Image (tube, rainbow, N blue to C red; front, top):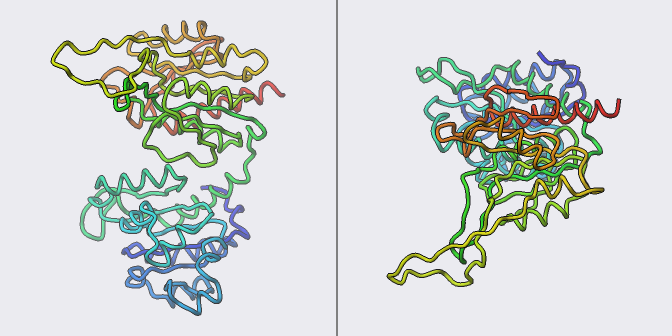
Length: 410
């Protein structure tokens, strides 16, 4: 259980959507208020089918907001002020419908409008039938919201009101209280990388053949983006140089989008000086020499020969940049065999401080997947990390980087 002292004096805007779990939201209000947290509620039209406005008002001891078109509410509070007057917005229960509307950026009722207009962090507690939770649409919506910085508690596994069993039950009120407390505790926690500048690269590069074709690789950018977010969370000022990905920009980072390796090198050198550089991008080793300005056509003869030339080595260039060299340069090695041995050789050859080595052989799902199993190679040895989610890898790497700098300054 988290230290609930962080809740005293905080303000929560609670959005109650339409699901049977809405009855738990009444208990959530009570528990937050017991701990000194002020709660103001938005009740959706569907939510009011499960709990009454009067019960919510009695527990919050505040106006319950329901209608986007209420002239009284607009004159007294206004949906913009409502969306920004709290320290944290909590959506409990967060139904599949409301998550979809949030992901799409809709503003078709007061709840969706407030969520779109807020400049405050958002915590959701999903609650729905197991099939709805596991549906690819809901999973994609939740993943997109998390990439945008929305945090989540639950759902839990258990019996459903509909008679099914599986993930989809809303987290219990005290679990949500713990998650709210953890959010405020993280804001007050020390930022070990405050004052540090970090450069992170992510994603693939696209090397043009002609105006419509290019050479690329299967990198999704998930690991690099997660590292950028984790460093920012620890207080670093992060510039993320990203190749083409389908990912949302990580919270708290300055993002520079590029396509080719040459563009990435230019963006990296422009981001210097930096204290930390993490090169997680999968940069193409070669590009086509003399790309065609016009689309190459089939003419019935042999296919055109593509003459390749080597791309600039971004990691080695930054690691060897003299006075502008970051104090800590971390490279990535994507290997398909003898992973540690190749990575050790790469660390020495590139002149970087650490190498994070991962196995991207067919079947590992490292490229494009959500998990990663890595080895951290430093001058003093190798750490073998267990397979874990890419967010967890990013957090562990960020914590290791923070410990490295704290060790240097103590």
